[in-house]
Length: 517
Image (cartoon, rainbow, N blue to C red; front, side, top):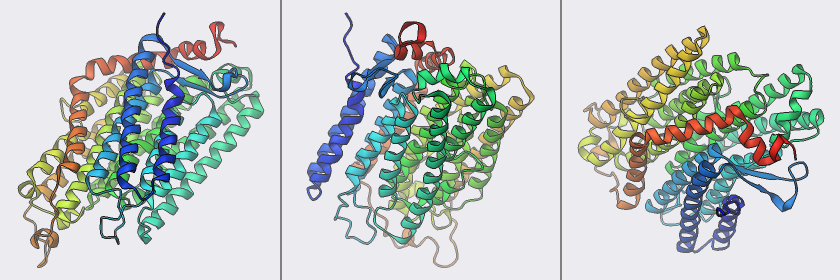
């Protein structure tokens, strides 16, 4: 008889919430907060690895909370897709926490002496971890909504750390946009329940086929709009470049890596499980193309590296929507692989940008230069994930894009082929954008006027310690590991995609044999 790993499923949410309570109680004891946070995230990473193995070898791990059935209560489900998302999110959050501790932290108060930590950072980060995990394992729409709201509350606290005018303004914009998407999502949940009498995902997959196609299309469109706002899909992406760059480096890193991917995950889950017929694939393909092109054009127009990376983040969401819109096993597998790649690489680049700011005193390329000589380590740490983001062979970014292009060619429609061309163009422009930063910030002798690069010329740049270099380098290594292990990882992603297109493994795990409770 095989061991039962299902108790680990709710523990993935309960553990960070307990940790958040403990760190809040230890508000003025920084060492205790750090120990608790590290213990929780290390534990989550270990449990996520076990759940990934169990989901891949034994099938979806399902927990009926409180012993209620799927028709009566909350269901938590960890299948291959959820397990992959949980483990990559746990790894990057552990790296971000280690980085924040290494930089003196969790202080982020620009007006403080740099040694006075903000006690709320650790509880907020752990609540964020709980919210992210909740969205990945939720088996019903309302519980998914609860996970989104946990994310919203924690992310607003993290975004406004330090209370500067710029951060509060950015946080207000973020909250207003998030509340709008939440209202749309909540209204969609109400309509779904009115039409079907349930919000359980497995039951909905059956009952949606029993109502009119027009009603199903309306419900699908409302859910897509709500998730697209959270995922920063064009034309609902303008908020992201205005919100993320103001936050401290660790906060921006975890936001860039994870928060938009939660919306992408929700789109993958609902499009495959609930709407295999009444889909808006052509609309999604157009949105994917516009997201790619508008995002990358915004990126190449930026002098500030933070804003450039924020626009590339938007642009590369288009690749993920491309895979979802294709709907094939190959397209979904490539999208899942690319999600894992993008979470890792985007988080790494924002952590490296924090190092650039510490060394160069700015993230503006007009005020930077010669960083490769001043700090060769930072140069290497930037170059590797930057080339990975651009999709240079043989990195994982290249492999993921090749998979999406192949899936688009296999689909064969004129719109899919336009997306293939758009993907290639976006990749080339991404290479141009990161190469421009590489040349200007790391190698250029460009001096702007008389004062030039003040922070560098004055020699006031901060030294980098192992506390910030090691977590950043570790994520760079994880990004390289995605390349080395691309074959096995793509195999798991393909099995996850096959489960999504078949739907039976999920339905049988939740509803029992025959697909009914």
